[in-house]
Image 1 (spheres, helix red, strand yellow):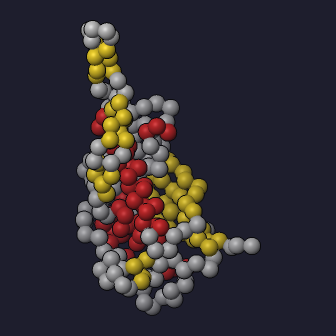
Image 2: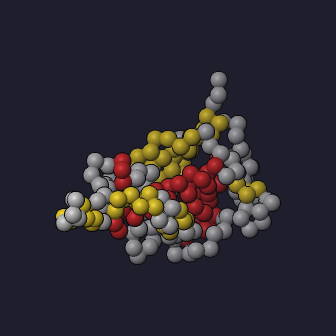
Image 3: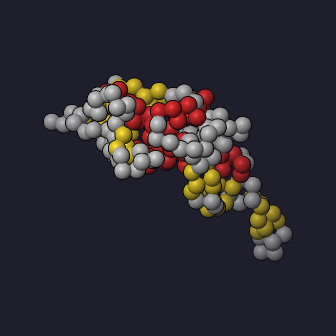
Amino acid sequence: MAEFKHFRVVLPDAVDTNTVGEGFIDSRRSRAFAGLPTTLALSQDKERAFVRWAAILDGLKVDSSPVGVTDIVHTGGSQDNAPSQIDFTVTYLEEQVVYMYDLVATDSPIYGPASVDPESVITEVLVIERIIANALARDNVDTPDVFDPTTTVPFGSDNSAVGVRRVIQIEDLTAAALGTGATVLARRDNIETVGAFTVTLL
């Protein structure tokens, strides 16, 4: 029977040092809520939050792909507002070595500080932290569906009336880096550019 190791990630909104929140991080898109965003700007923020979430998942899958990302918990949040915190569990097979490749020396795998055993818990925690930091410390661009609650269109046989059409539009959307530093380095110090968050072995 397979055995697993689980790492709990806690991302508070303190990691977002942008002057404009731009949605923070959210695994839920606007359509997941009972209500709908009240403005196009808020709808775009919600999609930016989801783009950042997708960047984290993509980063985790690049080198040592986890078995799954589960137990996602949001603190607060709505169709208009970002959660104040998002927690989730990253699961790997027990025998799996968690690693990533250095973004500076791309042919060098990173397991953590050279003084640490590559298979130690400390190393795996640090690697997961680096992966998440790298995903958040850069701009991420996507073309998601964006709900527009404000678009008005004529209707009726003579176009005499104007109504609100809740349009889904596809547009290029940039989810800006959450840190003050845009340089992405696969090093532990880079985590400081996106604020404090934790990764813990369960």
